[in-house]
Length: 581
Image (cartoon, rainbow, N blue to C red; front, side, top):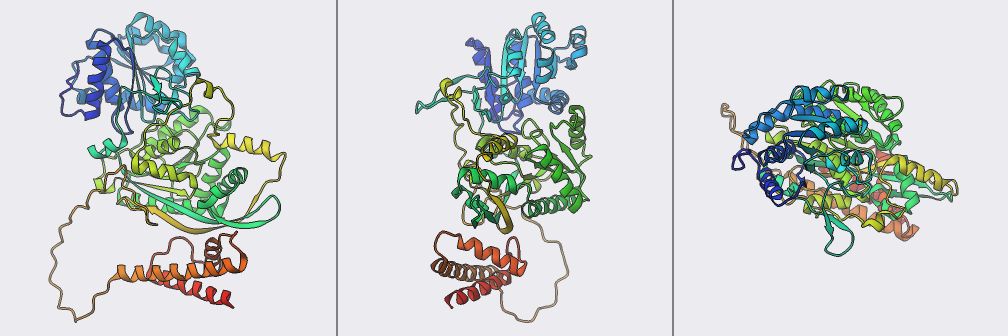
């Protein structure tokens, strides 16, 4: 039995096990627990088996994961889980291999760790195992189990006694319901909402501390010059793409992923940050890159090799030229620290745990909120080998209007969204959720219409969400309402008293910088307004002026000094006077 008053259990873990015991007593045999990344799902999974065994419901645990890497992590984490649980439970664990599954019974294994793929490949063998035992099934990363999917069908054929589903984000990209989870009608009557046994929010995890890293997100904006299908050339910033027609938006996003002027600045900031972190704490920092397609991942690997050869990179995807066994080996090598950067396509977006990942680069599509939050979760897991001040996840991403609801989620953590009812799920035309499908859809549409083409891309500034919770550009982010911890005071090193300095004035650098920023903004606004009077309001005059300044002066990226802002303000003032004639 599990000691639920054990102080080593987190509040959500304790609540999940208490409610699981109550649910079993009330006749329930399948429940879902939702906890954020890093909260200790393995402890809840093993604890749920201990509770089922104590109640006489089960004598064997079949623990399933979506990947081989996660399977190995769970397997090696069982002892730690039992130690935290303080459970009176004798465990004989077995790492399943389908060809030798019979050995589990021969060796009286009572905890068997496997993957969903293994069960789907040999359902009869696992069914025979369950026939001979009273099996408690634990489904880790349960959002992989779509109700109409192959994995879920294989699990339904297993005669298990009890089931515990675990997930950090119980919403699938295809909006299908999770197999075995309970749903209830939404309050507004539109669709269904999931009804978990326990839901520990990211906000709660932040309050408990030492579960998630802080977040620093740098969103790089660009001035994009586009030739429309009619041959007209117009300019806009990446953050203003929502104003384009849907087809043009998809074309722009797809072309930007391959545009060197768009990709290289993001890769540069990513690489510099990772190299700086690695120098500070060798062996404790790695980078993760989200690519859009297999060809895109290979292209990004060449970009890293050309511009940042000091970083050891590997590519993992499901392309025909990369066997599954080789992909799994590369993942294992990355976890072992043999690579600094993992460039992947849907191989590490979910079910991928690596506390050393502290820098992310997102160059795939931004679709709905849940997949992006899931991707951020790959790097948010707290690294207990580092001090709290160094537990910061740096994310680099291009500005996109679709980021707005994600920022809103990080600030307020809205409720888990509803999924469509059965009738709505059967209707065609659901939102495209990956780059390959998007490209296919675009290709079909492009057969009947001309495609717009990007002419030029220029950096147009950054917005930075730093780990103190401040969004430069005026918006506030407090990470689920939790303010950043105050910096730890540092004791001054004893030094000999310096000679008395000559009297001098005090320089207020912050005031100087703010004055220069205001000067730059004033003349930029005046120049943009005057340009609008001359050329009309249809163009984005701010973006055009910023792009012209970058081309003429070579000053790209974020301005950082008062001199930079004054120099740009002087340039804008000259443009204003030129426009006045």
